[in-house]
Image (tube, rainbow, N blue to C red):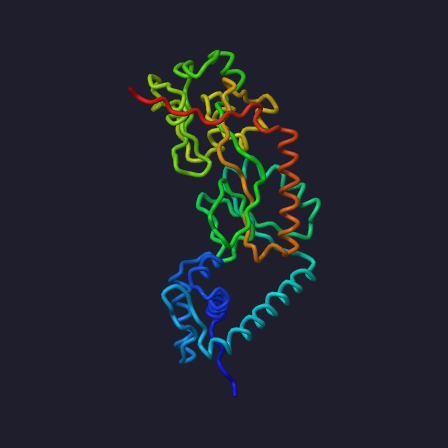
Length: 318
């Protein structure tokens, strides 16, 4: 007798919930909400016509049908995953989808991708450059290059390098303005990020305030919605930028931009992020190894910021 199988998603959610005996822990692993896991399991129970879990206040218990179903589902999903992985490995080409912020893509990743292609010509990279954080649950994104550490328990996060913030200016504009200390910025046009909450954003107001500089009006100047546009404006003598090291290091190393005031503050880091369950995929392993190699080259050649200071404590108002 032919039996119509339930949706694969509901079986995946049931397997995770049964393994953890918790909808909450299953949701953390799958990077979705607890209610989404619960609803999928309820739909599976309705389809089968029996309860799979006993809901207790702090945990779940498998019912007799749940105990019978769990090992079969786990074995089937494991076999499916293993077979698909083997097929992918046997194929001549593999696909890897990479997420990062647009400015990071333009100024750090893109200039280095030819090296990856030369070393791994059989891996096709699909780059998604967006402001919003990647959603690993839908598995469209295989790996993200993210600013800052997240609390997603289902993901593995490896630090590539630390990042720093410091003012930068073109040599010609510095020759004209002679900026020797932060107070001299009153003579300069400031370049601002118009999305102050974005991951790669910097804030002149915060930077000046932390240094006790209250008299300088930083409301004027030019505003841009992407950090790499700010770097471009600085390179074209449009003003002084508050740059992130990962975006301006190449230009500073080449002398196209100058770091001002020996005032370098460490601020967060750049991480590669991927689902723990995907860690053994050969294309992902190859890209991770290549990223770590590029991070080492970046720190060796461009240098971590020449002098990094802890962020100064704000001065208290009397």
